[in-house]
Image (tube, rainbow, N blue to C red; front, side):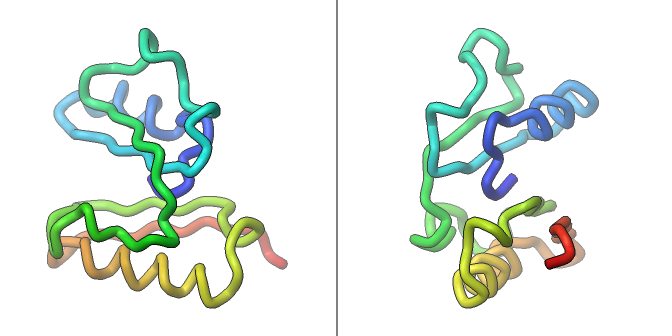
Length: 102
């Protein structure tokens, strides 16, 4: 989850699908849930996605999720993050983007 904020989407997904590994990325670590509330199949990483997603290998991720990031990124930055997501997605992977109509 790109820009996971407080991690509610990640926590819900991790609870519903315990066989999956869920990764939440956000620049603001202070928003992450308390460590004691995080299920074992979910991790949160303080990370600035504007630095690229180089820590993830090409074609290594099944699903990328971006929500409400159009207020945090410029058009150029958003496009770069989307390109990075396509790079790390496995063939047949899925990119979900949900944004407000601006």
